[in-house]
Length: 254
Length: 254
DNA sequence: TATCGTTGTGTACTAATTACACAATGATAT
DNA sequence: ATATCATTGTGTAATTAGTACACAACGATA
Image (cartoon, rainbow over all chains, first blue to last red):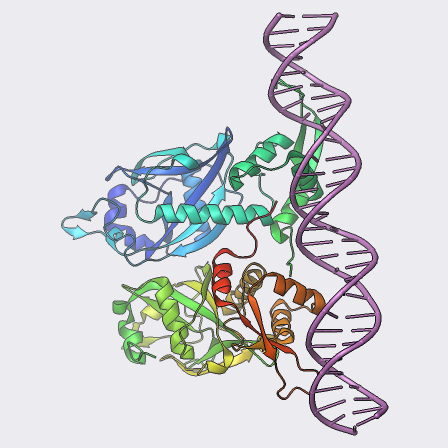
């Protein structure tokens, strides 16, 4: 993981020399553990409030690269998939509304300007993440999706919209490669789907459907631990998974 | 239609006082006429090249309002539906790459900075549009989708992505209210769908499907003009149409 | 009044989705 | 050992959605 470009004070006073003004991005980083969908949140040093991991766009950096940099910085991982889902630009977002006013030598910081933010979501493998705060924040940790604290600005709206986008994505594209360990059982995969979609699914139909999508490879049986009948292990067929990730399952209806 | 805020020269030299720097938006305005899907394009005064209608975001204006303003400015209509589909932020887009360099008194204009642009599409009723250029452009007119000229910057990419988004939208939401006259025949509606999706559909199945969606009301017969059997006229049931526009046809599969 | 292209309509076939039940496994309790 | 229990593996029938396809009615024109 690279070191941050600027210290806290430098960012407050001279950030506008390095980044595009008025523009930020926020990343909803989803993880999955223990039948719970989780997101990484940051606690701000100055106001103590929680927010989505965010960042700014360097003057010669693409949006995608900037989002990549943010996710890498907070997780220690290079995200394998990033999805831009919406830009949020309400004029009163970001205007002295994050619970603190940044200034230095009586000069109000560029951070107090109006910001348009671009929302990305990403999915990462929970167990590999090392949650890491950035220069403006003191704490970075996972929160269960059903226990999110109050968030700054419109971050709650952004989070909600990210979830809608993720659910939509789950219907049209393969997911799981980055949320589950390499090997997993069908019930585990099903629980992931159920957790993301927020509804329960029929075991048999789920299996039929998922196998029909043709991206799973069945391995040998597993025995470890489980107090019941040992389920099969599966892994994703990476070439087919990659293809499906590009084209999706559906090609258009009506 | 409101008058533009600034003249050409004012925009070049002092635009950054009124608008957010580094940020623009581009609108893909779709119309439908004569079995053709069309988009409004603008011809730039200075380079003579064609582009999508675009604009900037006033310092106290929401993205949606700005997009609304752009569409209203080019068409004379208040768009009933606007869809934000993607933000484009390649670092070399917008850098002296629109075929002309804006400067004034040897000062390079803010227009030559790097821009991140937010893409919106909208659908409007062709016959009601009065194509109107803006202060930077000399001409505004409809182009058939299959005869688009070379466009500045990455506008071709933006247009392509807008079309993908529109097609996706057509599968999930009602459309037509803003592209067709108030009363229309089933064959007309079908041709619209076929044109947007770029494929032909079965007449009977199309009717079955569309009537099943429950947003159409059949009126009396029409006779005028048609050299053949007079088709029924339909109109949209506006309450149901509005509801479907919010929720879409599908609620999620898998 | 015959012709022609277009519209209106219904039915059989196929694929996808949903609903549902019983046998096998593997640990734990007796 | 054996019974119990929760969980996994598997298949089939019913329903719904989607696709393919053909003929009669209409309304203008020849």
